[in-house]
Length: 217
Image (tube, rainbow, N blue to C red; front, side, top):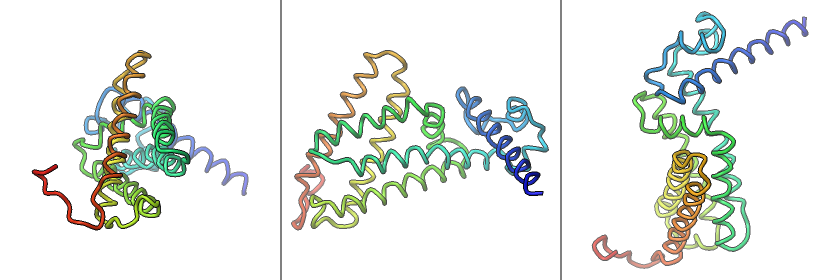
């Protein structure tokens, strides 16, 4: 009996994986809003009935893809937070991790970048919620860093969101760069300079005293 249950679970997992992979391949050239259920099942090699055993609709499939795609991004965030060494070394490590993420999971990253501001509300909200959770995790780590001493919770979260937005912007730039080594290297240089600029601003942010007015910045 247990072997039968195990075989059924393995087949269920295989079918779900086939549906996710089929959707990812189709989303290379289109948005989730234009993705058809029958199109997905045809590429996956399963019946529409099998689709409904795993997802209620393509929106739910999209949310599953968000969860899967951002697991990889989350691992990169954690690796970035755990990086040690001087600021320049940590910046280089951070950018290298982002580049590696795009090399390993281009379809997942392309999906997140496209659907972050896409037309499917539930999926857009899922991406936003995940990125916000990442920012709060980064803010907590920044607050524990000696450089975060005296920072308000709001300012730490603002800085964390800046880092997360930079990560999304950088992986988008890597995707757009294509296979050309010169273009890829240019993205790397720009990303490192931008992080150095953010770090310089962090070092000089007014902590414990009145902040400058916007027109004085």
